[in-house]
Amino acid sequence: MKAVLFDLGNVLIPYNHQRSLMAVATLCAADSALIRALYEEVGVALGLGQLDAEDFYRTVIERTAAPTVAMADFAAAFCAGIGRDEAALAYAVELQERSQVTVGVISNTNAMHVAWLDDHVLELSALDLVMMSNEVKLLKPDPEIFQLALELLGVAAVDALFIDDAAANVAAAQEIGMAGWVHEDWLTTRRRIEEWLVQ
Picture 1 (cartoon, rainbow, N blue to C red):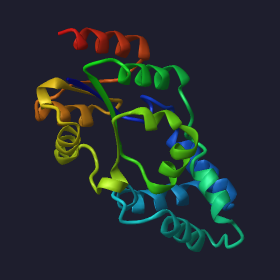
Picture 2: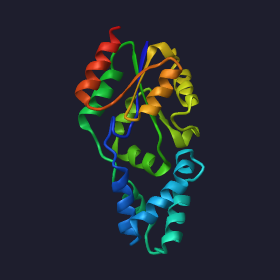
Picture 3: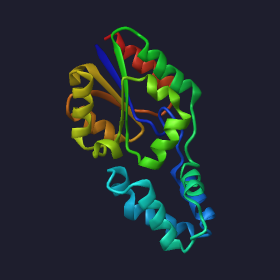
């Protein structure tokens, strides 16, 4: 059995972080620099699940003095930078359907984005593993998140491939014995996956 593990943002789905922050700034009638600073202040805690969606919402509302903004509207704004890549998602599902291939996702994310993904990226439910950092309390490039993924899938590191758009995350996977490369475009990534699968 071989495992192909993907990052989510800017690999299987498009993600524009600045668009999300700008949407929150516009909704709260706040300076974009303030919203960026607030996110930098709490981003790691969000990613580790130490701060939940409502805590983040309350923090931003209190610091921007925008008490009339509803939680649902805030969540929609914070998810404004997430989209779908139909071809990439279809390919991941097609890989999952092959014999002797297991497919998973390892994503640094947060509860608000996970809720959006649950509603808009149903393909994830077809994969053998969907590991969200806020749920497992680990963030890439911590090697423990890769070790946990391998353990859950029952696959050795030498039989696993990890693809991410961040070089540091790929390097961390490689350090524990996984194959991996930095995603730049799907033409290249798809070709390299197919080559790796027949090695």
